[in-house]
Image (tube, rainbow, N blue to C red):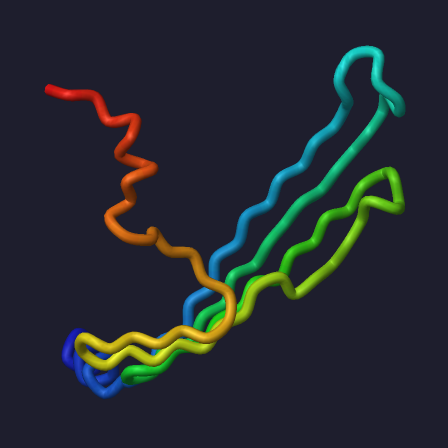
Amino acid sequence: MLAAALLISSAAQAQFSASSLTEYQLGNLPDDEPSDLSNFYGHLDLAWRQNTSSIGLRLESFQSSIDERSYDHLTQRYFEWNDGPFKVRLGNFYTTLGRGLVLRAFELPN
């Protein structure tokens, strides 16, 4: 069994990954209307990687007891090519520009 698993894993050249997050809220702040507010939020991240390329997307859903706040959207999508020192990403992405000096402004000395 172990030898078969090693042969299959060494021949695999693509990887699929999925992750999700789900949150539910019931109730509201005191003295706010409606008093019985309920919200559901969920997102699903999907990614496919093969050799030097990858594609990914995020699906988001927000359902509220107040109908005008509810939505279902494809909120993020990207294509990425990465070959050694070169990396190109088209679509949605997050990154730290420069050396992240804004984040380091709150660093405490020894």
